[in-house]
Structures are given as C-alpha cells and as structure tokens.
Amino acid sequence: MSILNQYIDKFKDKISKKDNKIEFVRPQKEKMKYDAVNIDTNNTCNQRCRFCFTPFDEKPVNMDLDTFKAVLKVLPLVKDQAIGGFGFYFSCIYEPTINPLFIECLKLLPPIGKNKCFLTTNLARPMDEEFIKDILSSNIHLINISIESLNPKKFEEITKNNKFNHYKNNLDTLEKVINENNINIPNLRFITILLKENKDEIIDLVKYAYNHFPIESFEIRTPYIDYYENMGWNKEQFLSKKETDEIKSQLNGLDYHVDMCIQSFDELVEFENRDNVLNVDSDSYQSDVNNFEIVEAYEYLFLRINSDGTCVDKKNNVNEKISLENPEKFFKDKLFELYEYRAEVTACLDYDEKSQIFGEGFISVDKLSENDVYVELSGWCCPDRKININKLIIRLTGLNGDVKYYYSSTKERFDADKAKGKEKGWCGGFTTYIDKSKLKDNKYCIDLIYEYASNKNVLYRLENGILID
Ligand code: SF4
View 1 (cartoon, rainbow, N blue to C red):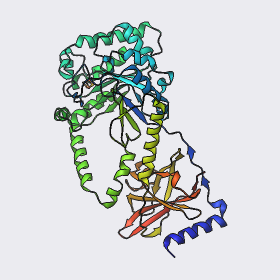
View 2 (view 1 turned 135 degrees about the vertical axis):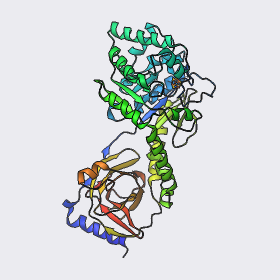
View 3 (view 1 turned 120 degrees about the horizontal axis):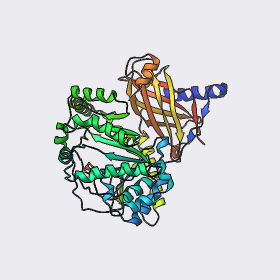
C-alpha cells in the first residue's frame, strides 16, 4: 500500500471513529473585488520633474466623458480602503487637473467615491477659488498634493516648471477656500520626494503644511528607481545613511505625524545586491512556481485604465478597449478571469510524492475564505525541526479519496518566530488558492508538505479540515 493510501485510510479511520475530533470549517464568503483600479484621464503633465519616471513619449489624449462614465462602472468592484483596498486612483502617473474635462469628471464621481477615490496633483496649473471649491466638494476621499520646495529657484530646478507663482498662489487659495467655506473637505496629504536639493528644507515643508492646512498626513519618499532613462539622476539623489538617519531623527522630534518611506544610498546598494543574489539562486521548483509568483504579486488584482479608453491587467499584459456598451459586464468578466487564472496556476498537476515523515508543527490559519472561484487559505507553520520553509506544496485529501496538490507562496514570519520563541526565519507563512470547480469531494483534510532533506519531505497536518458546499 502506498504512503498516500495509508494516509487516506488513516484519515478515514479518524473521521469514522472520532467524528468529534476533526472539525470541518466553512470558509468565510467574500465578494470578488479589484484591490485597486488606477486610471488617468489624460497622459501628460505641465511639469517635467527631474525624478519623474514617466517618459512622456505618447501622443497626448484626454479621456472623453462617455469613456469616463463607462469607467465609473468599475467603482462598485473596487475594494474599499476601510477593508484593505488601495482604492480607485482618479489620477495615477500624470497630472489630472490639466484635462479640460477635469472638473466635469470629478463631479460625476458618485457618493461611494468617498470610500475609495483619491487623486494626486502637483497644484501647478492656475486655479481660481471656484476651481478649488469644486475639487474640495467632490466625492473624493483623499487628495495628495506634491510639495518639493517653497524656494522658487529650487522649485523650478526640481520641477522644470518656471511658474512657481502659480503653485504658491494655488496653495494660498486652497488655504483661503478651506478657511472661508464650510465644506466637508476630503482628507489632504502632502508628499515630498527627498532629494539632495530639498533635504535642508524638509523640516520647514512639514511645518508649513501642518501649520496652514488640516492635513491627515505628510509623506516623504525617496525617488523611484526603475529602468527608465533618468534613473541615474534619481540614484545620485539618494543620501548617505548618516544623512537619512539625521533627517529621520529630526522628523521624529516634530509634533507632527510624518510617513517616511526613506531609503539611503547604502540601503539601496544593499537591496540591489540582494536582488542579484536571489535572481541567481533558482532551481526547477522555482521555475515551476514562476507563474504563481505573478498571481501573488502585490499589484495582481489591479486594473490600469489609460486615457484612450483601454485597460491592461497583469494576466494578459496587453491593452484592451473597454466596452462602452456594457462596461459592467466587461469589468466583471475581467475580474473573474483574474481570479480564475490565480486558481489555475496555483494547481500543481504533476506532483510526485517523495517519502514522507509526519511532523508535529504548530499551524495557525490567518485566513480561510471563499469567493465564486477559489478558496483562499493562508497562515503560518512553526515546524518541529529545521525545514526549508520556502519549498512547500499543500495537499488536500478528500473524504472520498480526491487528492489535489497546490503551490503556495511562502514568506518569513518574524512575528511568529517571536511568538514561538524561535530563531529568526524558523517559521514559514503560506498562502494558496484552491479552485472550487476542480474539487470532487466537499470535505477535505489539509497537509503542508515541506522539503526536509534531499529525498524526504516532512508533512504537517492542519487540525481542522475544510467544508466546501
Ligand atoms: S508632477 Fe508628477 S507626473 Fe508631472 S512631471 Fe512631476 S512627477 Fe511627473
């Protein structure tokens, strides 16, 4: 009898004799949602900031109202920020206020926009009081305002915009409108990119923003690094560890809340070196899980909508025209497809079981939920011996013998190490997606199969099984 059959027999025995010993838990129902939808109603900008990663090499296109109305049909499918969504980006990588239809589009945002919509502006185009009032009265949840410098010369050097007076007038008008009108304004956040050119002004910028505006936060970031042409300049703007430590300590000494996404040059180099090492270290298991990594990426359940009415997702990675006839169906179908693909690549169809030993690890389930496509299972395991926490296959064994294998994302869980008094990196987190349409039984036991030695695996069994209707 194979190890697997022995296990199934053992499992059945356990169910029939001690039905009260194993509990089959129903996953919590969840609606399918996009984590975020990023749109731009135009594809250009009135500045050319030196740190900007956008090449501005496309023909300028402003989104028309019919397309924008169709795009709004996606809003109910975007997860609210209050439940962990990233929201509906009314603007993402370009400047929204220069679209001639900007205010009209804003006014079309329905009340649910207050739970999920935000925009980012450089506040550089000339704006009068009416224009600013219209922005503040819209159903936007949050407005991000860029603030790189209040020194005209530095502002112009950084943004390549020689109209500092427009920017400063807009700040003054914004302050006046907020103070003189009884408007329930959106949350406000200022954002500064930390550069060599503005590092000496950072503290004053934070104080200015908090003293003049009812802001919810101030964020300071280091420049974005990717593979575009100007990244060399961006890299040169990174400060030394000593300098960033000094700035962080000054910011921490203020009475204001500051979100700091600040990386020093030393940390950047360390990160890049680590990335190179990770890229080299691949093997056959790694190549098998490559597709799985796509569906586990932070931006997988994102949809990017361009100003020309096309959209792109992380599965197909090609621009598709949004249906103006039936946009609700278009967005729903696309979302369903993303969920389906996630479940499809998670299935491990040709798993060959090696000799196994049973371990006695502690397993905690953080999430057990189901949607129309899959069951999501995530948690962490504190094994009873040193195992490879990055090589994990999850096995489901049905009460009637249906057996399925799944890839799982894995990650270090330092919180669990601490809770269990283990050395750092001992415990392993896991997440997998189980395609409901492929299951033949409705009650399943779950095992985590970790790599232990070259010809052995160690198996940890979850205390509860799952029940899928
Ligand atoms: S304001 Fe934003 S979009 Fe415009 S150039 Fe600067 S960083 Fe780029």
